[in-house]
Image (cartoon, rainbow, N blue to C red):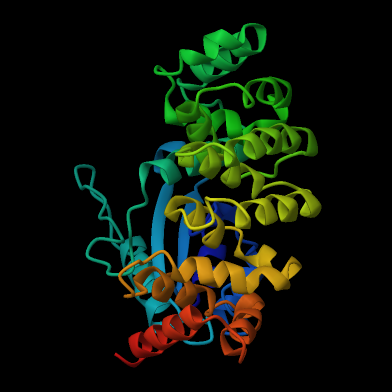
Length: 348
């Protein structure tokens, strides 16, 4: 039995979220095509599908279930059926087990090698997104985050008092970005970099409007010219990656590739793990991107290149563009060495 088929039989609703690169809802039809091997998984990360399965029985919030699944994919990015079958078997077995009043419900993912525990940032953002989708009240940390933005709008100096902010509250505000556009527009330009990064880790999971994009872009341009400013540059890149403006995003990446932060590890990861597909808009810069990636390991082991480029070459939308740059007869010598390291790693 397919997981989609099993879930459709439940007396309740379910949602699937991808939690690999960014948190986003997985269309049920899209997932069904993946399950029937008609198509590859749309959002692979490190050759896995990173899924959150949320099951909500009607009017029984105390019985809601949230599972995190890390399903390996084959060479074509498609489902390996026995991985799915293992989960369905566990769920069916659990549903057929009669419950006693004093019986604790078993965890269907107990001892499941394809389950994982997400980090606190992803958990906070997913919780905020689910609560919003269910039209429920946000967490108790929400008011503190709202008051922080309100105070910062009236008096920018108060933005220095960020230490009492809770990550869940920031995630709740971000999930309601349309309600807080004015205060975010006012505060993102001025908040300390620590708070700026915390908001970026939540805002990156949501579409960013043109007005907020412009504020962040202005801060980003100034940040690129300052030394030892990784936190601010990385934070801005995370937010800009969600901009609805293709033109603005491409401009931002061009500026980054021409800056001293082009070989900064945190900034490279912010781009390569989330915004790699924008390389299709700037094919002339792909070689620059790959060279910078190869330079991350000064000891010539090319460990970062092997891991990141190996992941990107797994993605159909960008694979051929990267291969063209790597196979170019006029490629820089460092790319030839990095390519050899990647081939050796695949043979092991």
